[in-house]
Length: 596
Image (cartoon, rainbow, N blue to C red; front, side):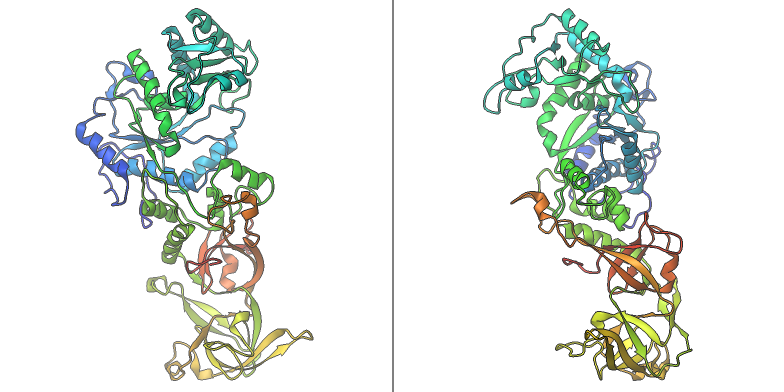
């Protein structure tokens, strides 16, 4: 997961040489290496596609030494926390010569849409990973999941419960009190089987019955108190249409999907640690029934991403969009991957971030500046340099001929001479930053003020002679004279020693463009910790200005990134830019600071 690597392929040819695992804190590497040394999964077979057929005699050995998976729900857009999981699962598969499956947990038809599927696939590809032939959906296994559910009923391990939702909650117990058995727990097997089949046939309304596993209502682990595994839901599914009106729940679906796909290490975040006993119970029972082959996958939990100055709760992100606190899921201030991409963040920066923060079993907070630094490090290497004046005021060189123009040379990247140089036009009237002039300069100010000399970067040395003001007393133009023999790159330029060096663009040639300056969406590190998180929104998280840019930026293509000298890294907006009229977003500043 190196920020300097090219596109990463998580699915490789079996037996191909393996990338050297990065030396970062990641306990899962030790798990994989231990499994490899012990040959834990060496006996697995693969029938060519997921399903119970993999257990049949004569199936070929599984060609992949490890299989991981990334299993999002297609009910929203991916956020920064998902990026960590994607880099982890696909990165481990890549580093150990395995395969990472892309699998959608599409068991809730009321909230899932093809739009989200397409967005998620696009985000994973953008991050630099490829699942190859291993694109799956939980809905691929609905028939098998239903058959396994009948097997649980027939063996006395599941029953149809006809309690209301309120009754089930009341009887579930608490963390300190055991639950109470449902009155339907000892329902005859054939009656439960008949009811379950009638549920699947559409005879009952939503909520009339659920299918529950029969485990232990007195278990100290709430997840083991006869969990529901199928519920009635009359809703159109984006892949299976109206074929089903009973749908499996996540805890039941997830572990079986892992087993059908020969997943070796099922990697989840820490909130699933209490679900692991149920994960193991379901798979062990099905293996005892002869419906799944051992060795079975194992679940491992890692600490999710806790990042300062953002919220990653799906509920809160939805509220930000629906209540119009932001301009959509791809608003560059949103901690979504579509938002990050539009802001100008890079996949290489995200991969470097995932590598830098490592993987642990303990929750911790990562400061947002770490992510910004990873983006800055990558763009420093890859972004061409250009000149932009964000708060322009006119600079008039009184002794420069009015009709004259000439070219100055500027490097495309100061540390990469092989990138060459470009010509920037110079004329009598230039745009400079308003802050680069002061009538009464503070101590230590080396820029333009009456009587002071500065170098116009890549151009000439000028001496300030004064300024013009409007009727309100605002400076509308700065006046100066130039020294014709002081042009940068000439031998005589070395005769001029000045402390100030400012940037500029030629006024007749400049491109006036809309530039969006983004800051952090929240003004406190932990939004919502002390009050409603909406109250912690940063009112200054976005400013739109009209800047004067180097003429060459007029032709910038959408998604192209540049360092605007002195100001930071900017991207041509991938949505609002038009040919010959790009709009720029600031991705990150040149240094790590608030409002950087």
